[in-house]
Each structure stands twice: as C-alpha cells, then as structure tokens.
Length: 174
Image (cartoon, rainbow, N blue to C red; front, side):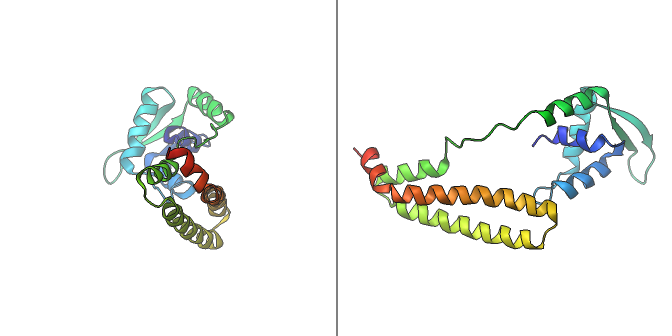
C-alpha cells in the first residue's frame, strides 16, 4: 500500500498535523503494522516537495512546532488517479513454496513433509485470524476475511500439489 497516497486520502477531509495522520492511519490500517512517526514525517516531506500537500499552519507545541498539512489540487488529482486504478492482480507465478517442493524432490528430501508443515502453519494462522475476526469490528472482519480467503486458496493448492506429487517428481527428477 502506498503510504503517501493513503496520507493524501486522510488529508482530503481537512488539514491535519502529522501526529493526527499517524493516529488515523494506525486506527484504520495499522493494527498489524503501525506507522513510525519518522515514516509519517518523511512521507509528508516528500509530498510537500512534490506539491501534493501544503503547509497551512505552524503552531507552537510542548515540543517542536506542530505543522498542519493540507492536500493540494495536485494531491487530489493523484489520489483520484490512484483510487480509480485497479490493483494489479497477483498471479503468484513465482512461489517460494513451489520452489521448496521442487528442491526437495531434486535433493531426495520429502516434499510431502514440506507440504504438511506448510498446511499446519496455514491452519494455525487461519485459527488465529478466525478468533481475531470474531472479536473485531467490521473493518477488522473484512481484513481477516481477505487474509482467510488467500489462505484457503493456498490450502487448495497444497492439497492439489500433494495429490500430484508423484507426477511432479517424475517430471522434475529425470
């Protein structure tokens, strides 16, 4: 996710301080990966340099001066463009797990064990996400559903690969 464009989206309703932006970001998007203050201010600096935000006020505070930022017309144009573009679907044609399975077959190791170990890890993560989803608000439920659907697709691939392991071994180990 583009942090800069996300901050632009958070600025669109009205000017905010960097602290307020970090708090809003963490509340909506940062439960698992909150932003660091340095990341917020470095991003705001780049946005300012590129003319996507402007400084609307500098207010004295208990520590350093508090700067209030607002999105510019150019920032709104960039945000509109980003929101209107679909995300590139990830085809996962290059998979670390597939690589591990092939290398296990090539080296005489058990590819089935690799698949079983991965299945166990996926199921554990799914249980964790299901518990989190049960106790979460709608936003958390939607994030968990997204992750769960991806994990379900991975599990289908694991089962299919396990079923085809002998055929794959014949192709790989010639």
